[in-house]
Amino acid sequence: MKRARNFSAGPAILPESVLEKVQSEMLSYKDSGMSVMEMSHRSSLFEEIIQDAEQLLRELMNIPDGYKVLFLQGGASLQFSMIPMNLGKGGKVGYINSGSWAKKAISEAKILKVPNIEVLASSEADNFTYIPEIPETDEAYDYIHITTNNTIEGTAFQTIPRFVNAPIVADMSSNILSNRYDVNDFGLIYAGAQKNIGPAGLTIVIVKEDLIQTENALPSMLDYRTHIKNDSLYNTPPSFSIYVAKLVFEWLKDLGGVEAMVKMNEEKAGLLYRTIEESDLFSSPVAVNSRSLTNIPFVTGDKELDAKFVKEATALGFLNLKGHRSVGGMRASIYNAFPYEGVKELTEFMKAFEAKEGNFK
Image 1: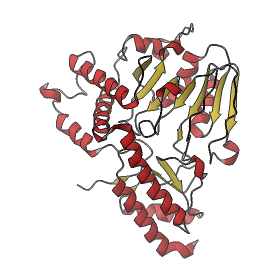
Image 2 (image 1 turned 135 degrees about the horizontal axis):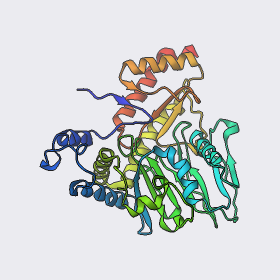
Image 3 (image 1 turned 90 degrees about the vertical axis):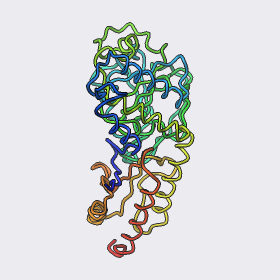
Image 4 (image 1 turned 60 degrees about the horizontal axis):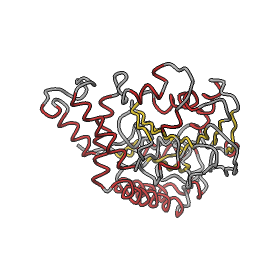
């Protein structure tokens, strides 16, 4: 069976070898006679899965001992609320408004009536086409929130800002394990799994333990302390998603880890960006110094022609290339599992389409 070239922003492509492994273990995991989807999360088999998943992630990201790794539910969107509830201590909190998801994180903090919310920098006035310049400050903040990669707009932080008196909280949903990051630069990292890690339903949280010594009385399920105390097993976790995540971590480790993956991603993105730059038809709406390696939007400048491109691409098996409605045009999400050959095929189609339709513009 021919696999589609799936450019979806999420749920996104998974490594074929991982899917084959899942298939082979679907009916009976380790001769247990049960699928992972059927077994108790209190069983020794599942405890081994979740412990292995954590250890592999710690290895891949060089996570220090002072950080806790949590496997949670609710998507990255629930973290927009959990973070101020758990890390807010009544002081100022800062946000960098660099895209649609950062904007939603700010909105959730306002719904919670968090005092002293400050938007330290924003590129909203220019449709989030670049990462805004962040001012230096030595003022104290409970935390400052950034989105390392903006899935919708195709922008990414090239360097992580540092603040003297504020821990960085990072939504890393769309480029975790695909960029070079030092966990020590962050107080908390969170990511929805459905882009670079595994199926939808799992959220990873990596948090520096000394940040959550809060006195806040919180609902148990929204309290990081609950999940730390219970090793992410306070209630039934997204067990199947954790199992697949473990397999993806194994796959990534076998490839050579994050450093090897970054080189592959740079090659894939480089090919697509070169094709866009050399084209007289296609262009990138993103500032060069803010471009993402994983989410690459491009446009023709004509909505009718964009729609024709997407339609013809879809017919050839290039799926989910339509850009987000807030940006338009096209968007290729080329996460870790997306092969170089698929990007090459897309660029060849882009050139053929331009040769055929270039005079339309």
